[in-house]
Image (cartoon, rainbow, N blue to C red; front, side, top):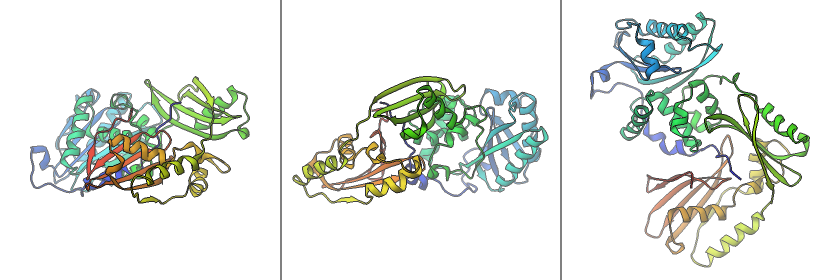
Length: 415
């Protein structure tokens, strides 16, 4: 049965070093780079604003076709950027882009020599309130990204005709939901992306200066999706275990994946997150594997071949009590059997890297608890001195990220 990918905890730790402080760049490569501040405002239309040292607008540019329409009748050059932001919001409202009572707004800061962040948020909120609306602001800094990372973002932005800020937001989300395509995410509104942002780990959320409240009025509540699944089978919620509910996107629809075990069967529902309609339901026999036997057999097998140094830092009884009860509620017995064993994870890692047992000198496996669920971090050192690091989803065994000697390796999450 298909397993929903779990939030990634370590990816951003690996890439956090790519960001440096948001200041000016003395080696300007284009006229725009000489601006004291550069920022983008995204709702669905995207507008990029360049500001001089006197806080006046040098120029503006649209990041998509909707942005072109918004700027067509606006002349913002020479205005204070706060006034320009207000005019942009006014135009968005006039053109019907703020039809909901609350809308998510993505503010992406590319250069911040004027410390525009606080003023931008205040002005956006003020402009929304003038029209009887409320803004849910997401703010991120893109200042002086590593050249390679910036190049990747620019490619995504150019390919899908979106802002670099939205491209970066999409990239963040895909680090934990690689099953969602760039095309699907690029087509979503900022409000829809904000809903998905609720499902990522705290490590990912930490890369945003601010994340406003998600706009969920358009979707059924998670509890309603769970109740719909249980009521369809006339099951009492007190008689289920292993309950998981998670919003995602599939085949162009926002859906809830609801999974639980009842009377020896494991059920998986897909429920339309907008209408609450049950789209599909599958069930199969739930078999709890002999976890200790799997791990023991693996260790015995490989200990006979070479001298491994296993570092099992987390005991699984502790994980069950500390982590799974937190994610799935108290009394969720047997949840540790849901995840793959460390033996299976190591076999998966060795297979992915195409390494022979005789090449290995040290293997370290850690179970990491993220906000949405457990992941495995696997570190492998070979006799030749090569060092591999992998992040593997604990339920499905999907390799989410792999590195060799600090350089990222290509992986296929669908494999």
